[in-house]
Image (tube, rainbow, N blue to C red; front, side, top):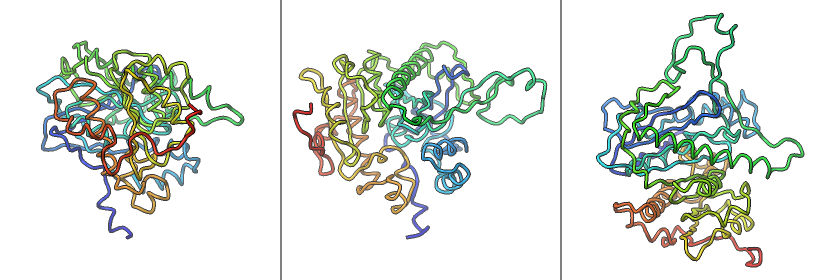
Length: 404
């Protein structure tokens, strides 16, 4: 097989009717601010620049830390495997929509960051959504950054550093990296993850608050220097139609965010990892939830916690995609050949495009149903109930009823 297939690898372009743009937003340079990548319907431009899939080498360092590999070696491997890939969206392209867009806030998994789910986010944007993919600062991202003010000695040491795109506007700011924090020896997992999931939900709500401000026409300060004109987003969003979505730890974040913020009208949890959540929040979640699971990741204890959200009055749906693994949702699944993909558990038995297509169509149908959209996504309604050869209604995991 060798290298001959490598030219087929890449993140598939979005299938919806709109061209997709993306830009980065960082409000407030501190770690308390909000940092997200925005995907949106855009004007088609001739000279569309597509951003790198991994924004800079520090993210590779973070991934190698997360996987416990030596940084120097890891960076070489990751750069070789993934360094040349681009995201299927035009950087800073002008916003375009003739209708108000529904909004989705997206939360990444453990060890991920804001760019790794571009296939899902771009697909939603191509169907008319504005999607904010949050980069979490709870030390669950493999890497992220914020800025701190320069010390007096750093200011005095004025070496003229050339400005690079995405550098902070203020010359007195320095980039501070925050890397993934693993469990310390003997540390219990739940207290850390529970504290993180609460911060993650707050960060999703903060991103939403920021979008609401932008929509109202309030001038916003973006710490990152981008070419994107944020004023074009005034009155662009349908703030009655907001959903929250996430993968793995992001799936738990969806549940926590629904509990904390009623503006989220429904949630989609991709292969949710339920461990971080307190049991007492389950009865307090009042919105519809759609669990889309992989075949290989789930286990009885995790599914039984999802089942605690079952309700006679609120729609709670679950499907499982046959032949999928936990990493069938992030972009990695498209970027490795078969043997590396299977070796690193980035690929399942199913064609990754087919798997994500089913997940995206089921998601669009669910969002139409619960956000009251006037689109044609209801053509995919049967997928919500697992009606497809590649889907299982509910779960493939067998567990004792008494465990619930």
